[in-house]
Length: 302
Image (cartoon, rainbow, N blue to C red; front, top):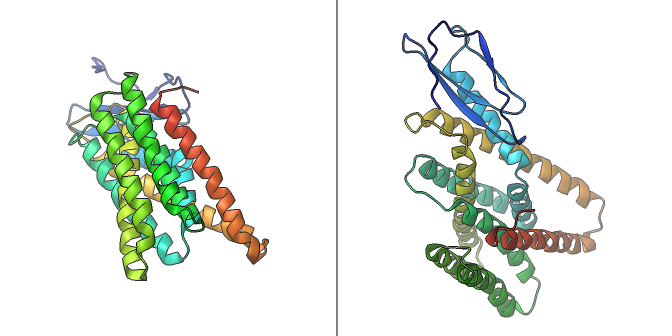
């Protein structure tokens, strides 16, 4: 919507059209002299000063930074995925490679989706985010199970079967079915090839590439959230940079907190029980990821 002020604009504006705590509303103010100010209304930030001396693009930039921090902090599926990655990592180098790959992946897809270079299916992406949690958790379980081939096959068959069902029921279109088939193939390759990689250098490269792929899925999810604010397509750079920076800051804070909690927890657990605790948590996360995958694939609203 566009509003034109015939008279002098007021000193500030209060926006109250929030129907959900997570709702965002993007606004852009143009002055007669060509100055421009942007603002992101949030449930906790409903006032905007119109005074020229205080109105600037920096206020809009930092608004998107805080939105990115809040999104990663309240996005339970992203938190669960990062927790699964951290629990599955055996060494600090694996943590570093995993987070680097994830960051590069989601930054890339967040950018191209926000800049309208590609239009992902938002609901399909949300379902695949749940699937990434299941895949990461299943990889760690395979490390201690003897029946690896069977587990790899059944986990990889989940997206194939679900994709066929939702397409048959006309819940999803045909192009989404191909996406489910692709995710099934990727899952099988990821779980099957992992045990053949033994040297540390190859493992590091493999880990970085796979988390890059997972990050690309999550990046589309970030973009869907950002685009819901109704951004001006001609002025995307500042919101994109601000939101992505906020996501990275929130991710670093979250990782620091989780690693601290894991360290404190394992200090009180005997070494022989650590593996059991990790596997139990990964089973729990896998169950949660599976639930989200089914719920979002069949578009069941809780």
